[in-house]
Image (cartoon, rainbow, N blue to C red; front, side, top):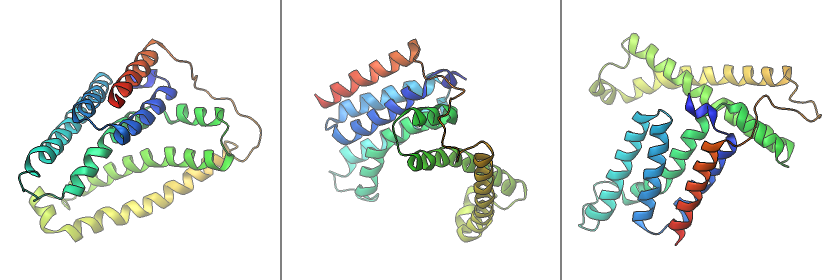
Length: 224
């Protein structure tokens, strides 16, 4: 996959820049321009479906905020729409960050002068979230095969039953995954105080430089 070729530094930089754009950008047009840039990156790295979904959510949210709410149509909560508008940019960048090998991010954290306990927490989060996401997909497929989910209307008409069949297995799997991650970390010497080397290199390639430069330029334009 193309996403595996870029450095973890690039993804972290893109995530930080996206958070700053979401906080400081006042112009709807520049905000939309940065969202378009992130959609292009998602599509380039092969996540075309996700790019379209994020674009549709952002377009609907922006349209409702600019056109419908000023007209007095408040069927959808303005606070919810505002949260979607603000958080969708960091979410898109975070999606790319979690798609690169987790070892790349962990190697960056070990290079930085961060407290050891803080690095350990970040390592567990990075390892745990993708694993649980995969477990949830497995549970979803198992529910579908056994006929627990059925069609969309069946799920809506039996929300508690659906949640029971989804949440209970997920909780037990989370406990087991947590134990497995802890055992794997101990076996690999997570408690050893010596300095570690990483299998992954943090060197920047041409693609990394292009992404970082373009993102920084767009960030400056958003501030202006």
